[in-house]
Length: 182
Ligand SMILES: Cc1cc2nc3c(=O)[nH]c(=O)nc-3n(C[C@H](O)[C@H](O)[C@H](O)COP(=O)(O)O)c2cc1C
Image (tube, rainbow, N blue to C red):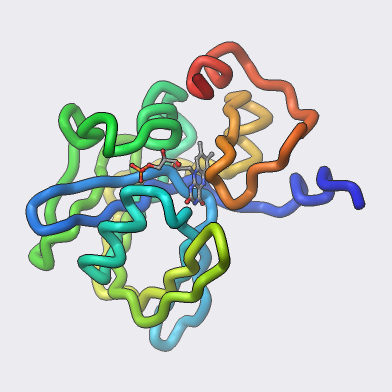
């Protein structure tokens, strides 16, 4: 079996955010998919050890910010390689809070949606949250960043907690990507 096959599956780059009462947290996720159109439902795969997982379980809702190609590696590093348990990732970030209390990161984001969880599926290390879209809007013009662009143009890395992490993968990582891995 050649795990490099999996590099050919296409994804986008997103920040999934949620809240526990007045505390906010968010993380990078590439596993965000629209599942149905009427009603609009989306699925996200979130590692059970992430703080974002705890917040989604508690509030039963989440937002998805669609990242633009210009999002820098330092920004992705903060949300994708650090946990909200170590530092408040919202401290220096631009975000808005919806009437439901759900936070939405607006930095480097071209559009967002907010969904209410209608089903959670245990996938061993991760949980697949199925959400019904309740809100959303365009934030600015721009090109959405793809997972392929993140790897092959920005030379970013994927940490072990991401569902699409491949042990011993042969992709080249730029120093900034390696920095983010530490
Ligand atoms: C490119 C990239 C893609 C990622 N995709 C996912 C994902 O789809 N699901 C997931 O649970 N973690 C994913 N991660 C890892 C989380 O963003 C990371 O574990 C984060 O530190 C969790 O933060 P938290 O503990 O504050 O929630 C990804 C990270 C990167 C850099």
